[in-house]
Amino acid sequence: MFSTTHFPKALKYWHEGKIYGWTDAHVHPMVHALHYGSSVFEGIRAYSTAKGIAIFRLKEHLDRFLYSAAVAKMDVPYTREDITQVIKLTLKENKLESAYIRPLLFFSYGNLGLVPKFCPVELVVATWEWGAYLGEKSVNGVSVCIVPWRRLHHSQLDMKAKLGGAYIQSTICGLETRAEGYDEAVFLNLEGNVAEGPGENIFISKDGVLKTNDTSESILEGITRTSLLEMARDSGLKTVIGPISREELFTADEAFFSGTAVEVTPIIRVTDASNPGGSKREYVIGSGQVGETTRRLRQMFKEVVTGQIKKYEKWLTFVER
Ligand SMILES: Cc1ncc(COP(=O)(O)O)c(C=O)c1O
Image (cartoon, rainbow, N blue to C red; front, side):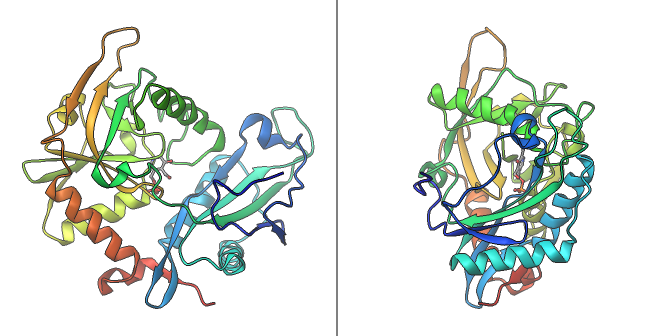
């Protein structure tokens, strides 16, 4: 019944204290989260290193996970240490060399009023092998479309949290842009600046200066983003944090997405469809090829997550077999 075609190498998942076979599903259709998106989640990657599989920035992901749960007013019956052990166990049970890890906390079965008074908070951890999020084009660059819908604003919802329900905006715009032949969407914020992708942060590079925005621009403060900023500064690149206007994006020498799923994915074309019902205009970023800064950071990121640069081993949590 449940094919694993789009969950390569998935064998088992953990739910509320038990390991289940991947196809062994048992959650009731009336769980609160299924109806209202009352869940919080994380996306974490683990990579194969010379010392075995290692989870990238587990501490920061767990900090954000528990922060998201607090924003969603969840009374979480697990400690950070419990969740760490569950993640390690699930990784081991799946015998993966490299993995995407999905912890999920959700209001479960109890009542269906909007206030989940009688719904316990339950934890799921699943893991599988997830390749390049935006497919083959991740190497040579993707085409994106600025959608007319503005990103949910930080005055409306805490965008620093990964709240399940808020991702319906990402899903709708992801579907819309793909139907029109683009690889991914980009949101402006209510101020009219470039915010982020549906599940990615954005960087631009101009005249050798790397720039990205921050949470004041209604973005999720990506852990990949923060890591890349540190790596860029350490390797002598000048970095700036501030609002990114549309024009800055169109005239950038380089642009790329960052995120756990996409890692570092070059953006080579941007179509501006931000004016609802208006005309669209396509811009080529820089030379239309992957630029040097993007290439360097992409390579360095790969080396960091696979434990090839000693200095950043502090970001890895090794998992014993
Ligand atoms: C909306 C959004 N922005 C940015 C990111 C990138 O964040 P990270 O680098 O922590 O994966 C994600 C992914 O979690 C996301 O969902």
